Length: 118
Image 1: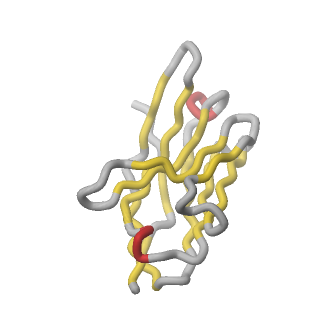
Image 2: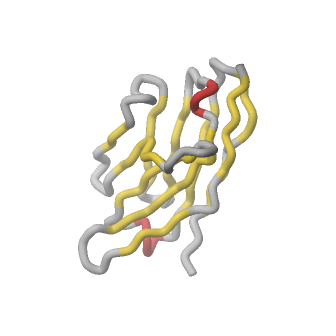
């Protein structure tokens, strides 16, 4: 069973910063899109940020200008730097690694709680 290991969640005041990290085994990090999703209570899981194996990044409109995403292919690590946090960023954040060409796969981390107080 593939396990992604997330770290860095916590409680922060509005305007503060947090840094989330996700480690994925090399076998599922290479040639895969790595991404952060989040799910707030009562809401659907949504894509926050993604990075292709070639380094192309994509951010949700709601976090553009505040969050940055990067990956270190040598360390199989995905990082989400979150600045200027808002209460509406409160959610469980999940790491995902996905390969969309054969052989396809999609693996999730266990989630890490981010809580932003006003």
